[in-house]
Length: 149
Image (tube, rainbow, N blue to C red; front, side, top):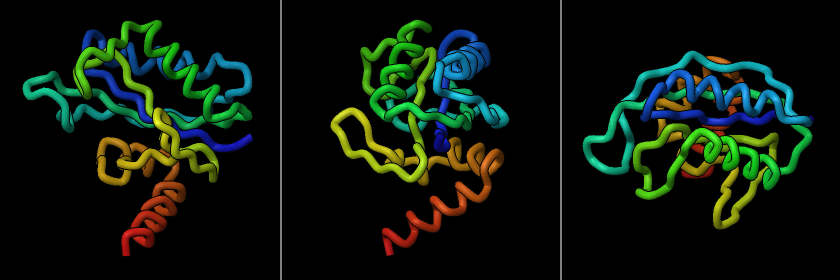
């Protein structure tokens, strides 16, 4: 088992319900154990079309034995089950599930990069991560800073 951290975001419909449904959906997957869900933050959109609604964002912590590819498939299924459409790049969405960290693994595939390449630039990820896993957030920031120095 290794640590899995997911970024959860929603800016359409009942945003809080979509965050909760994503948490519940991952919690129900065999091979995934729920550990913690951060406080939900209300944030302005970063990137994407101008004028889209504000987001609710959270970070979820799980333990898992599943592969990165399997986790991605589950994330995409949960998004689709809750009406996620990908018509516009970084456009409004009912639910967005990003794999942020998966143990000490690194992946650089066309549709999956772990650790998430922009998480250190996003307060709406780093603040909730620091809330539920301060040592992980600090370690990740230290590694990121070292990589860029």
